[in-house]
Image (cartoon, rainbow, N blue to C red):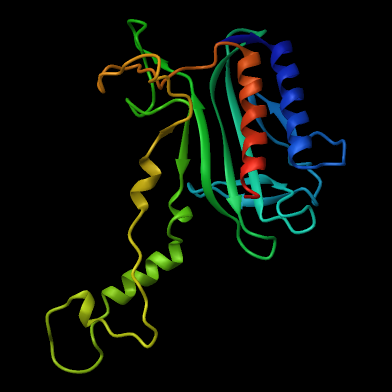
Length: 245
């Protein structure tokens, strides 16, 4: 998908408007910025609305508070990005976009637990399109490991399971032989969950998929800027409606 610079700037204004709405922002200052084809949250966001967070890849970014349970004591935060490649002086081509959801009040570190991502296909020398992850859905949801088992809990379970008895001679290790002052149920390792792509726009009800052919009916790119804008608006309003439940 290619658009003009002017069209992209209008798109940025619409994304900013829906962020103002979902974050219950009374300050009219822009919440997003467009720099060199990349749309991100603006560093000048009011302090009452934002905070620094760390992605699951260890990258620091700005996240906006969602007024959940209320604006004075937010527990959920959203970060976003959108990337375009320049195609000449006045046109840009869609590359990828995504939002990340974090949980944690201001007194603690906010942990990333959910992502929604959409990437354009890659064309080879013969013009054949393929998507990141081969069969992965585009767009897609990612459930991050911390949503199922926090890192500290998982590390603790490993320590308990691999610590032998402090008294007595050597013996065969098993979960049943582990001793601990406070009984602790070891948690499963959900580190693999980050590699799961859960399609957000699968069309399997319209087109049968053989399980191998790509692109599949669960893979697409935005066909227009209006479609991408509506996707952002729907995604932000949807998570804002679902999280309070």
